[in-house]
Image 1 (cartoon, helix red, strand yellow):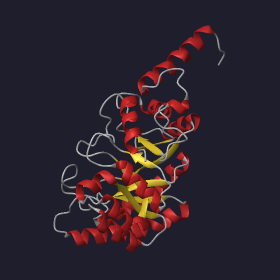
Image 2 (cartoon, rainbow, N blue to C red):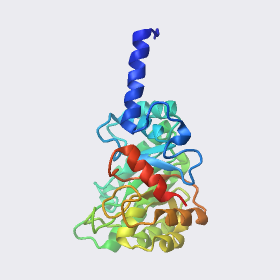
Image 3 (cartoon, rainbow, N blue to C red):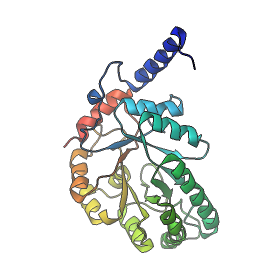
Length: 294
């Protein structure tokens, strides 16, 4: 494309618009953003929950403008994966993880395992296009006529079936327990003990837990103690404060203490920011940055 005064003006306007959307002002240095290379913990912004009124690809740039080194998102279906990969590469951003298998149909029902295997194969191919190393899988909602123990056994069977696929593709599948008190009533897997037991039974280096600290706080509390007990099965951490599922600094969780515990245990991975910002994103990010510092 030939650059002229009109083209340059239009490009500058687009860039300024993105900076305004993210809450970062033109001329602000990267080290003045809420998160930067000196941050103690590296965070991945969930771009389904942040910048909801912004075109999807532009949310990657908005996250980069606030200093996030990575993003995560929910289902890969219906998204232009090559465009996501290209935009992330251009912005120097990591795709931390996405959802490979959601709530329905449930992995906790044996009749769905053929479809589950096929979708995991597809998700592994998508992950490679994104240069992404992790993908979330969900156990499923309660199935009429099955006990919780039976549903959990079915999850183990399903994960054992796809573990070799994940291993061959070097993609880690992260099983996410939910909470049934606030967000996911009727879900079959909640709290850490059952998730830890399931993953230990599967016994694969590429099947671990998406340890969402928000869900764990609601389900069981004792975040530091439970994290230590199940740390061998932690694949990825996510967070939100409670109550409200907003950014850290708005609720009851002492995230500075919890994230220091994770670091002391040896966690060096990204932490997914799966929460809704309580206000304009840059202000929410600054509140969070202060709340997670230890």
